[in-house]
Image (cartoon, rainbow, N blue to C red):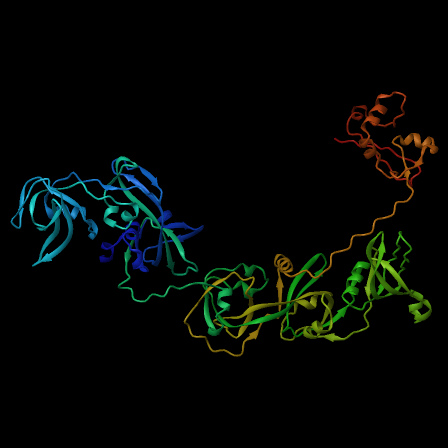
Length: 639
């Protein structure tokens, strides 16, 4: 109850707070609740509840307003206003000096105000004439009686007076002789409560109302909370009685990882993380708000990003280097010579078998038949039309020669263009089993493998159900080794980069446990998270080459009048624009086509219709290629 009596509005507290006295600890006593208890501070909601403790560390003037003492209207005033203000005198009459002092020096703050008396009075044997201005200076106490130290000017001399607070008379506030700048007023709480006049603004009487922007520290707030002093809450200054208060600051996973000297340590999760929805795992779904975890250490995690397909469904995995299963390499498939050229540039030796006939229609390049064996030798560059064009040099071995193991007679060195399409399967003669670490050191990623022995530490190895796994990329990233407080030895990795969880360190003792053991050797990813990982990884693949321009050969132009060309084959003549669509040629030469339509002697194609009412609209003409001997015009109806 005593605290509520000492509560003051936040605006009054900040106004009366000298900047030299900061920082100050304040406590929220009461405020406007329900909807108004949650304030939008810098784009985030901040709830100021009764009992909350804040540390005010700085204040900055944001705006100044003038309130008309008669009408209550607000007027904005620039913070750099250079005009001078005078105190607007109070017209009330007070029966003793103490009542006048209490009115003009409310809130425990004093300033040198001027006053007079309506009647003559004698103080200390000195006659004081009525209406003589007297300036109040300070207050002192003598033998439990309060006196006011005042000055009265008689000519150039100043006469000192001691007026007891109990002195009776008819006192009133006199017009002040001083002028005050805006900065001076903002530094005086009593002047901020006084009615002021300014000739540069008007004849009215105003009260100066500043609004400050204050920076505070709050519990469970990572950054400084910036708020305005105009918030409708009452506060209590508890700086002298609170002792030492440690404000709990939440940490991001990145900030927590920098405190390695404190590991292992118990921490509490403060909010739910989006990372829990990136992995299809019950372990990560348990990372909710309020969950206590044990952070064992920070280390660099090595894992392989893998994909697998079963029917039309694709699955995505993290395979950690702690995985104990065994792999066997599967032959890779390639769809163009360009795919083989990429490996040739990287220095990879490849032997492939052609599984689809391929023929290059341009240039003097050899064709490929099913069963032919190609050994990728190297890549080369040739000048074509003053440009350097890449080609792939291979040793070709025919299918019959490969079956007879006769490499010398039937093999030849060939040059292939990169845009040649086909189907090629890698020849693999090695049936060796690999662990994940040995596979990474031996083979070049990406590669295709199959799990031939499951991880014995896993009850159900999800990788064994796929006939083909594509190991795409080796990922190394810093992680925290995490365990739940109830089972601290059963650990899992929490990536620092992708986890947006906030936590706070606790003083709880770390529960005793065995050596931390990884429980998740394989983690299934969501499709969205998989593509976000691929997006963040640097692209190592070369862009596909631009295919060479096809050489134009002799083409035959079919005239717009197709029926005329059928009857008179001699009307067909060679033209570079032979294969243009008739409709496109009709659009490109609108004058010619209009003349043909207007000339009754020009033969036009006949259009057969089923019903006469559909003859005007919805008729389409289909023109076949030159390979057909006749053109067929069909009509489509639209209902």
